Image 1 (cartoon, rainbow, N blue to C red):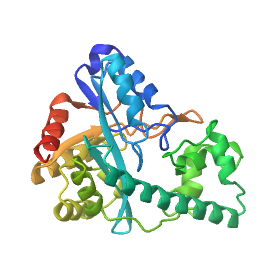
Image 2: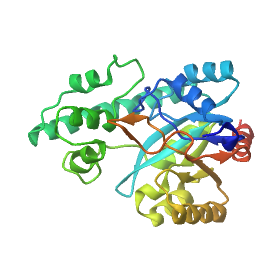
Image 3: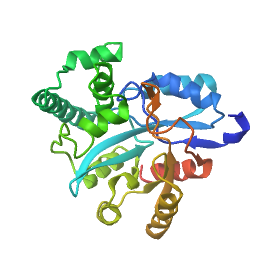
Length: 289
């Protein structure tokens, strides 16, 4: 990909080893630079542990790093993810809240592993951590992709997609949902930390009426229109929804890196937005501080 192709564009949804991504935060930043992006957001699940490293690398390379997070919530029988941008990621109350979410994630992980064992699928948390190839650092968490990786390596699935379809995806026999905060609560947390809340990848929920109800009741500032799992029709539909509700239309790849040769959900930079979107987010954050 030639550098000028992405000049002035930002990928606002990427994950690192701080949650369920494959790369250290600095690698995401370097890769964004190599792809010619003007900036990249680090949006790990329920943690901001990767932000310092990413911001330092961004400063070194002269590329903008947007501080972000992706908070796990539950509504309408679905796991709903809320992205936050430009919040004060050192805010102690915000950090305490994220810690509680990670504790819920740990509970879920243990329940998933227990359910898998009841299905005759023998994997342990120690094996999942070992598959990562490094110790689990403080404020990092295990996610389903880590488990899927272990399932493939132990021969219980042929690839990552098969592992999710057979065991870990919503509705699959190994899937477990634990009580989570509602979208409105996560949105208020982000605002209280000075950030800008955005509903992530609405197309993954399979229920646009639910998305509308969340937007109307919880009042986020933005909607993720561009996403690796949105086709052209979905992007047009969510662009219209964002315009109707006066939301900032954001976008990003939801890059997690490659496991077993498969990139989930898309390659870094494969979905991006222009700098105007980032400025809107920045202004919205400043406007509430």
